[in-house]
Image 1 (cartoon, rainbow, N blue to C red):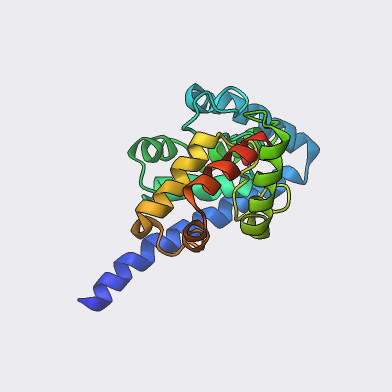
Image 2 (cartoon, rainbow, N blue to C red; image 1 turned 30 degrees about the vertical axis):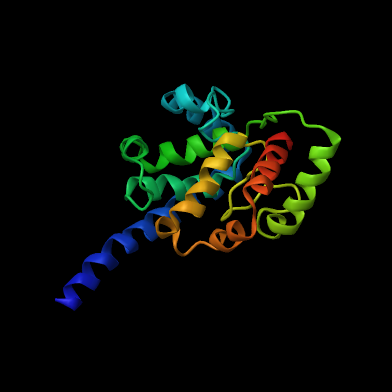
Length: 207
């Protein structure tokens, strides 16, 4: 019974890893050719129409509780597509949307949104900037980078809606079992609620 269970778990993970590797290879090939890159971005803009209702025409979210996709790391987005499609991320709406997209669609959409400029969500006072920057540099910059732009494995958090960032941090704070393997659990445990609000407002103001 144990062997059967491990086998069942291993197969979906293998398929997930294989599909992700395939998409990353496709993405690299498009990026290596100016013509293919332009073609992919154009195709991605057309295919991303379903995403724009919530995430905005350029990936700058229309709603404060939904993340920006503009300037997000393309390979990070591909990983999220696959996690939604396979149910590793628990969101029924996004799972259905992701399952409708083939590998090429996902690559092109990631190229389109990653090529867009993120717009800061808010303006803050010098005092808020000083306090938020201090918290960010101490707690967040080690993984997300000194500018909050992240990398292929870690999301861009600069310019994200403060409400969305707060909602995400609250999940780590109140429902740790949902993301038990994340290093974010340790970070959130060191932040007061006031610090959390301060740093998310600061992040929303970054370019």
